[in-house]
Image (cartoon, rainbow, N blue to C red; front, top):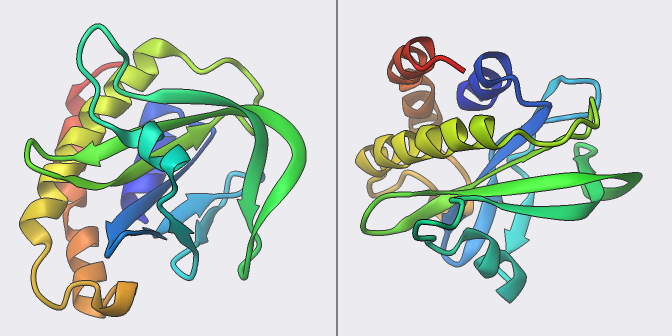
Length: 173
């Protein structure tokens, strides 16, 4: 939750959400609705399809570390992920370590409709790298039993906010 809120407030993202990989499925954590409110999306599961794999594959320079996909926007209703009439651009940035894929950070321009800024996306890629390493250190047996976050794992994710705050406070946009 805090990583989503920090990315919105400190990086100035319109809407964003984090999905973590577990047993071949992307498990949502928290996101943002069109009113700019944080939403609990932990009940959402996204199968990892070839389309999703293409979005989060490891990229090498000179490629950008994120992909941008124009199209319809999506929003969590509390039960389902629904396709909206509104069109926009969705950026997906891998959350990974040097050794493995951890998840994906999605953001879009759904609130303001302004183009995504490459400099902001670059800072987000650094944020995702830091986030990946923090999550990697925290993952252990029983952290996401059956794809659902345990209370201890959820609390440890919240505890990383200090490191993220230092990063976001030091890195100017």
